[in-house]
Length: 599
Image 1 (cartoon, rainbow, N blue to C red):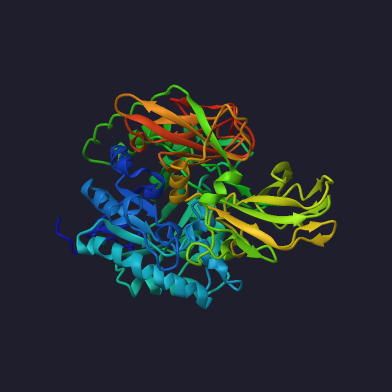
Image 2: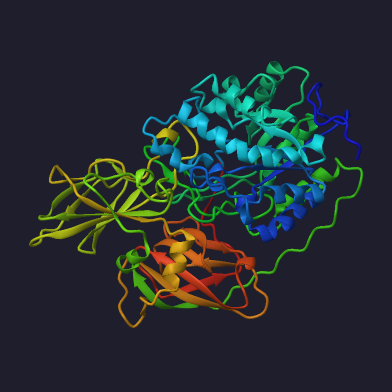
């Protein structure tokens, strides 16, 4: 098509090439969907009658260490943009730098927190310097894919819900300028919930609103602040996220469809957040703290009760939305792509194990420190600190007594004396009795970062590990040996190929790594892992981190994408903290736990 004028917001309706244009959008995050399935999910989006794909860009995956950028494989943003274009989808790009997204630290890299003065999402020089360096890389990748250059990007969002944070009035103009000065020329947008609209806008960007239940007053307010401009729901929440220890949120089609129908009747554009949620693979899920005494971590699944399920299945919502959106098209919608078959494979029996203590030889050598050092400030990963996973703090004690965390454990610690488990310290349990014993003994605290808060006012306080003194009988513990256990692929590969594994004839000790083989005959298909006799840990399959499991629920199954398996033997390695029944089970459908309606 001949391109003269891109998306504009100069009248009560958007225009594209000066013709009225209704955005029917949906969010799918490339980093939450196996690359082999990108096309499948986008075709299903197109077949639902959507015309625009919306995605965030996760800074913490693209710049895992300061100055080290990753844009390959699962993180090939340009390939994702090209794919959208080839399928005839427009794109709204949301490059952050903060993205919320129920993602660790809202997408901000944890190495920013090495600076004790760091003020995230402000014009603090340590933050703006890092943003500039990231934007230099990411925006130059996006620029050639803009509408005016023949690409699919019709709009770019400036930051994300800044009105709910709003600590620095110069920050939004800084981010806007950071986009413009690097060659972004398409329409700029901001997005906020109703309360955030008062403070989240920036001159020269169209404000959009986020909600789930329709409140006419909110629409009126949007009309008042932007008369004669298009109205858009940037995040129409199609479901909700889940927290460990809670219930699985559902938002029924019966509740949702009338709201979407009404939004469209009001001539408003819409983006479904999420259209397809996908999965928080690895350690990337965030945590929620607003209105709670302590943060609660997000589960691994990001199914979100979205119209397209975690594994790419159609739902009632999908079919009803498709019917609704079809009325906004002159041509019939594409036929529905077929659904991938799934299999409940035979259980994989655990054949061998290695204790946490024996696995330490495959980590970097421990760091000695008089006082506890938080994860982010450890001298590991080329002095970028540790971002995710577990950290083991060991010190020598000469007596038993009262061990007090003073709430300095972030987020959860298994406590050991001479490798024997004595209890858990977390936000609710802040004191443990250490049994008496003779002579010198080793006290160990295995501390897990359960996920950094991704929304709210506490972003600057998301350092993990031990963030201050731990007391034994009111004396602060000193002289630590600190092991970083971030369980990155290189460590998992070293561990899996090591000769130090014991057969299951030997009583396993906990925590430990457990290995089994999943045999696949024929072409691999999607499946779900379930671990009913286990308690808490992480699953790796062929070296890929599928994410955390925790018997506390609600989630009871982990999604295993077929493309991550191969014919024959597949290596399954489980890190388990406390117990195992010796087998890994598989299911053909997910179990997200007991449900609750979104309130």
